[in-house]
Length: 151
Image (spheres, rainbow, N blue to C red):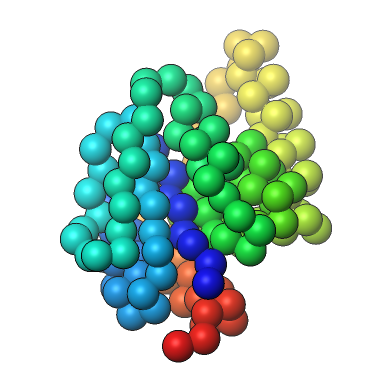
């Protein structure tokens, strides 16, 4: 059975009840990894892991624990790239499922935008996270779980 890993850094509050419901429904072992306490709810199969402070400490821990076929919920594109390279799955907070077919394109765009910002250009960040994003995530997350978990 697959495990779910949640990159707790900047995890939207709107997604917490959605994820909790699905975790309870499917009984999936879930690990919330962050450098501070993040609470998505109480369930016997949710495990909270607090790592030391540092930019990528949670990412490193997730990749260390991750097995082929597992799912990671993250908005961190470099982490998603590492997940995909381990033959696991990654979905972002807006419901985008990363794959071998699209991750390099997302990574290239992210790196380009980072380079533009480093040159002093002001760029627009992502649009604010809203209810429609949460609904799209819920739909994609549910489709994924239905496809990969048999209950």
